[in-house]
Image (tube, rainbow, N blue to C red; front, side, top):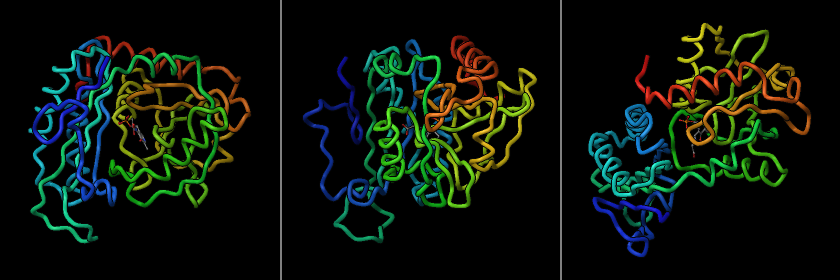
Length: 286
Ligand code: PDD
């Protein structure tokens, strides 16, 4: 199925989807983004994504962008796509101006939305568990902003791919695990579900939020804490969470089996509960 593209106020064919060379997103990575999923013709967790987008925009001094309008554009583009199971990419750059680090606040932001069929990616990820490697976290101190400056993530993820793995687990210079190159990370120790607390080191993942709500519903004890790589390696289970990967067990880390080397019971429980929530189209915050 072809990609549906919205650029600056209208749906455009691919040959008209062109960005000027002086777009600050292109020149500086001066842009923020969201990745949203749809299931069976329904956008999933759109309100949560719009509220995170508003936070990212405010954090980079682009709070003047109206996220209600962006939401309407996302709905319009998605409806035009007629793709039931899609990945929707939303990218807002500060706008176009001759290259200079300092920006002026009166620029017209560039708004790009694309809708693509996710089925090929889903079938690739539909495995009992994935392999991960460990990489240093080379990112800046505002990883809570969903910025398009993704070079460290891109390099780490590609190293994982080149090593035959699916994700890179990032380790902060101070020695603790932060998240995956494009996913949130959870682990299980002694029956407790653990994840990194929110802050500048991690993205406030939408799927992370769902998992914490599900854990509460299911009566699973949750701990938000930092963990050293050595302790992390001893976890009974490890899980990745993200919009496209959903909830996915890690079964090997750096070539070593995680726990039993098979998807663990808590990972499977959360995976099932997440899918049930999607099936029930229940994306309201608890
Ligand atoms: N990545 N951490 C990072 C660094 C991410 O890039 C992502 C998402 C997540 C998971 O967040 P969420 O549950 O809101 O998707 C965590 C998207 C999918 C991407 O960049 O393609």
